[in-house]
Image (cartoon, rainbow, N blue to C red):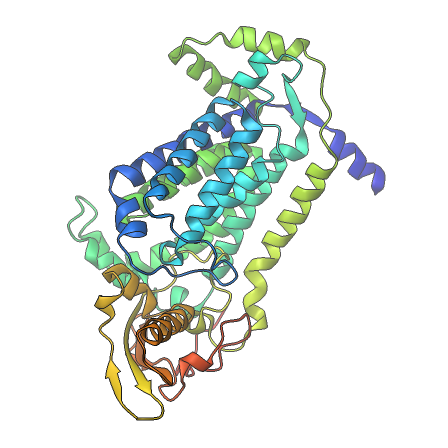
Length: 454
């Protein structure tokens, strides 16, 4: 067994797939930063709000005021350097740190694909993606190499498999498969899409999308692994993600997943891609190949594969942490984030907060619009950790104004996947006495229904 592991970790393969992944990843991230900046989202999401919702344990990460623009500039420049393979190791570390800081500044903006980008950029710190077709390799021929260890490419394949497979497992529930929820709510609203609008009104289409989506996520990584089905699988990837982009406003995520799927292809395909890039930008690929062939192979630190292996193991465990919590996952959302549960819920909520003086009995209602943007209020009203954090903010805010003996209560209702609204938080609980933690939230009222499955 040890010999097999040793042989595997010494196995060399052509570096072209890793180089293509680096180039496309960097370009996509640069485009993402430019898009975010040009749409005015930096100001709207990070500067205008007077209050930011923090991740538990990362309360110290906050928007940087006007310097937030500088943070995005660092993120964009480092993404460009990653694509070019210029000062790669420094660039990818800066990108990981800046992007992840941005991601953690306000959990209101949480998206699965932001987490995916953080995961991949962390892995790339330990991958020799700059050994081939990079400025670093061109300027330092001792760094150049036509090959890389096979595990460096396989690790990215495993990461993508984890994303797809757990996304598929998450769809194996009664709301998704039996009720076609929430697609039955979302798709009819797409009536104005040319050619597809009328189809989106048909119930059979809602079920076809539900079962097709689950089957796609569960099977596509394995079809990409298998050489005979790889091109067919890639065509399905393109169709699926383009259709997803047409139907839902999820940014560049579909394109990221399309180009990421290329990592499964043989090096010959990637050499053709690099040859095309070389022709467009007047680069001598022959000279690059010559330098790489003549270079002496450099060893990779043993800590790199160990770190990647541990990281991937953690990624297979994080989506399962919901099993440690009682209650319905979609209701409590304990263990929901960072687990590749993509577009499984449609939640609408109402939350009316009351601040009370426990000694005098005086109380007053809160207008959430005084403190939150409409987007923040929408996110807060359906997620218990948001509600708790906001309650503590209100208590601290009014305490600073001179109010004493403060208690904060909330009357809240949530509708999940087309069901009628149900009471969400125990209105008799003083949320100022509740501390955030990883413990089960026993101050949530029970879900008056049952969702079968995973």
